[in-house]
Amino acid sequence: MTNETVMTAGSGVWHSHGARILKIVVLLALLVFAPTLIDNDYLTRIFISAVMMGLMAAIFDLMIGYAGLINFGYAGFLAIGAYTSALGSFHYSISPWLGLLTGGLMTAFIGFLAGVITLRLRGLYIALMTFFVGEAIRFTISNTPDFTRGMLGLSVPPYPDILGIDFSRGDLLNYYYLVLVLGAIIMGSLWWLVKSRFGLAFEALREDQLASQSMGLNTTKYKLYNFTIASFFAGVMGAYYAHYISILSPTPEEFGVYRTVEILTITYVGGRGTLWGSIFAAFLLIGFQEYFRGLGPWRLVIFGALLIFVMLFARKGLAGLKKYFW
Image (cartoon, rainbow, N blue to C red; front, side, top):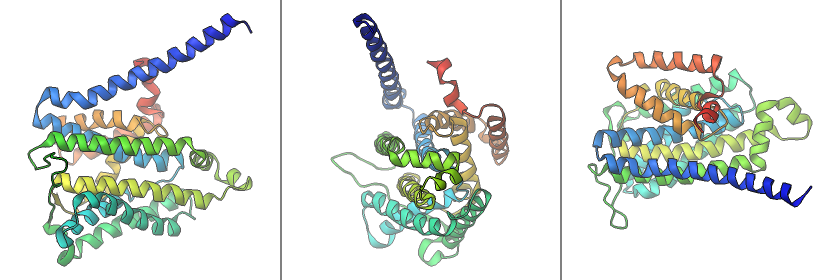
C-alpha cells in the first residue's frame, strides 16, 4: 500500500468523522437555541414534552431494542420515580433535587425485584407479567389515598432555586435546559453501556437467547442488569416529570396503557436499537399529537395504526431514513 493510498484513506476517515461531528453540533445547536429564539411558552412546552418523551423512549429502547425485553408496564415504573420524589417532598420535605436520585434508586429496586420474578420467562409471558406489575403499581397508588392522595391528585412543589437559577412554574426555559442536561447524562450513559461488553451481551440475547446460553452466557443475569439499569433511568425521568407537571394522578393516560403505547410507538418509529432515533421520533409524534389534540382518545387509535405501519413496512423507523437526510 502506497503512502498516497494511506493518506487518502486517512483523509476519508477524518472527513467522515468531521461530517458526523458537524451534524451533531448542528442538531445540538437547534435543541439548545431554538426555544430561546422562538420565545413562545406554548412551543417551549412542546419542546420539553418532546425531549422528555424522547428520553423515556430511548430508555425503553435499551430494553426492547437491545435485549429484546418487552415491558408493557413501563408507565408504572415511571410512576414509581414520580411518586417517590413527589411524596418525599410532600411528606418528608426531601429536596426535589435529591428526589431525582431517590426516584431512580427506588425504581431500580422495584425493577430488580420485578425482574427476578419475570425475566426467567420469555417473549409474550414477560410482556404480560410486566403489564400486571405496572398495573399493580398504578392501582396501589390509586387505592392508598391517605398517603398518595390517589385519584384526588397530589400537588408537587417545583424545583427550588439552585446557583441563582429560578425554577418557578412560569420559567419554562429553565425546565427545558434542565431536561437537556438530564438528557445529555442519560444518553451518554446509555451510549457507553451499549458500546461496552454489556451491550454486546444484550444484543446476543436479542438475536438468539438459546445460542447465547450454549456459549456460556448467563442470560438471566444480563437481562436483570438491563431491566434494572433501564428502571433506574426511568425513575429519574419520572421524578423530573412529577416536579415539572406539578400535579400527579394515577390515571391510565398518565401512568397506564396509554402512556406505555405512546412511548412504545415513539421507540418503534424512531427505530429500535438506535437510542437517538427516539429523540427525532418524539418531536415528530408530539407535534402530530398537538395538531390532532381535538380528536381526544382517537389519537391512541392513530398511534396504533402508525405503529402497525412501521412494523410492517419500515422496521428501521426514522433511523433507516438517515442516509436520505444526510
